[in-house]
Length: 317
Image (cartoon, rainbow, N blue to C red; front, side):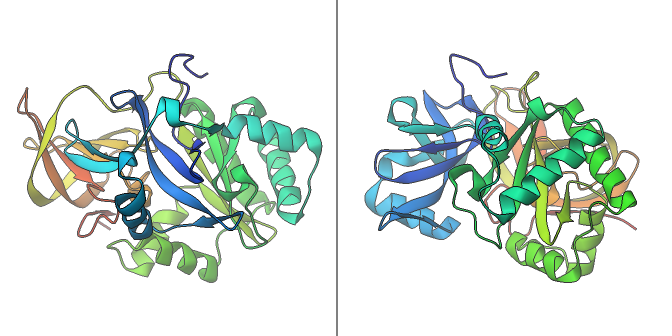
């Protein structure tokens, strides 16, 4: 499943000797570095989760070697040289270890029950992993369960399993409180009702015994949408268009083909709008225009910055 030359995949965590844990966000090498974003910092022998702003300020002040400006994507993110990776936390290995050792707390008990339900509906446990706070044993009673599903076909099976388990009552939809918490964390451009409507039909998150979980896809064959082209930014654009291909709707980055001649492709780098629309649906989309410097091809990017201010996808209802 992993490339021996570059074994890093999105949803992995990588840890440095300085006590920093980054979440891997890219399939590709970036000048022999792992594309990632700082998530946790070691403070007094405990891991502290940091916000985007805190992460950027900390690296700028103390660890500028981990800041990275991509000329390929005309964007800033974090990157760690392969030789600076002190520990590589792999979601599938950690999940198998937890399943074999037995639950150590209430959240792990819910995780075991969730895996049993998914397997009952046809999901192959060998293609599942565990990321987020549970990957580094930093969960609390209020933590979410962040599952990884490797492969697009396996991911679609997992979404179907969630839908069936919701229908049977084995799982529950997010109540208003959990949905509002999700909404606040995403800080997107849609209002709450619009956000909740889009989220509820994705079947990539639900509740097991009061704890929220979500499933995220990592590709293992045709890797990712990323390519070798170089892009420059060319302003913001808002259009109404129809989705003509949604095959890569849940990838990261997600990709939608639309019937707009000027920008026939939307690339989504923020999880808020992954899986947001389906083939045949009319959408309103606002994003940053990127131009391929070699071919002149143009595309819309939603999530050109981590906060994605002013960028969104909404289905026209």
